[in-house]
Amino acid sequence: MEFVERIDPELRESFLRFPILGDLTLDPPRARRLSAEAFEGAGGDKRPSPDIARRDLLVTRSDTSGMQVSVRVYEPLGRSALLPGILFIHGGGFVCGTPAEFDSFCDHLVEAVDAVVVSVAYRLAPEHPFPAGPEDAYAALKWLFASADRVGVDSSRIAIVGTSAGGGIAAAVALIARDRGEVEPSFLMPLYAALDDRHTTQSSREITDPRTWNRHVSLRAWKAYLGYGGDESVSSYAAPARATDLSRLPPTFMMVGELDLLRDENLEFASRLVRSSVPTEFLLVPGAYHAFEVLAPAARISREVIDARDEALRRALHLHRHHSPFRPGDA
Image (cartoon, rainbow, N blue to C red):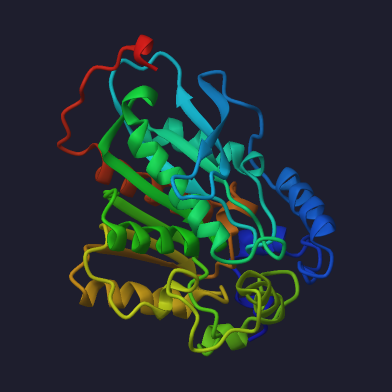
């Protein structure tokens, strides 16, 4: 059966309108403009919520570089208690993406989960290859822990959420946090995550349609991110699938579509988490392509997956938790 015929009928309608996904690395500025246009044209309500405040801040990295990282903070107006925090790491093939493109995604998380969301503007490849992205995201995570009281976040309830390339970076940040022992996130949610640079799985070979994340584009993006073609020396902080030890990671929720290039590496990563005694929930979505719920949020299957994702975050961050008061004057 042809790839398009395997797509869920509701998702297929929007998929057939997608443009050809060219090589992001040939002209990164142009690719970023097209990425912004694609997200602007995707379905869903893009209007800012009147119940959410947004502010942009600069976070200074704690290493010797003194470099600053930009973050966008989304918080509900009028809250009366400390809320859980979510560090969000956007997708874009390591080459594209900004927090602004995911404003509606983060607004939704704030309202659906009742949380403060911090979206990090990590540096992009090829101008800034690994380890720039994970180190910027980890700096934002450390800042969120250090500033929890000031931004009204309960530091015992901080999750890391990422999509696509950002999902891979989210998993990397969880590994970094575990290994450095400076902060302890309570939940991890890498969604259709880019975890493995090697492209040896069946799904990495069979997904070639140019309108979705495909083998050619993915290989070029990984080369830009790594700064070279890759070999056995690639760090697990760049490609988390290479990590030999997944124990002591936070409880995790993963989701990927059946027709996603990244399907098999996500399946294997989730299986390894389970074997490492990490509480893990995994959702495989039939007939779904890469990032389907962002690109076609109105489809029935997208709404169902978004509901499942939101419920997993609510369970992880709110169930059986004591809510301490938050005084706005403390911020």
